[in-house]
Length: 101
Image (cartoon, rainbow, N blue to C red; front, top):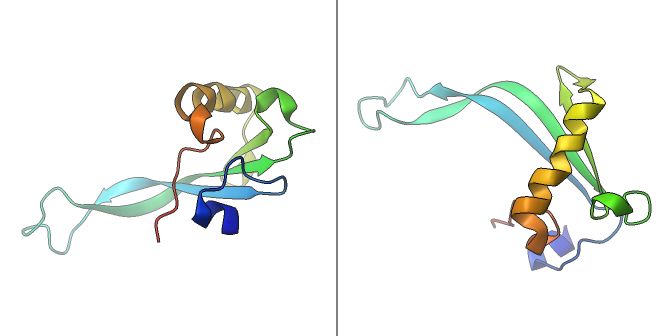
């Protein structure tokens, strides 16, 4: 957590990042005030990034995992993770998110 809060890059080996993704559901209460507001609905995926610079050297030191309904997705889907992270977040150790206190 220290590296994340401080923005220390690269992240140290042993770092584990988790992401929950969910469907957007229109906000029912308060819709008349904020008509385009959404809230989290059902979970769609759980995703992980694990930093191990030796084991995952070919993918910037990161291993990727994605689960749908608690089951890992196929290998082909996992192989698409790094190409997107490399194209859009290479300058931030392949991590899209930033610490938000």
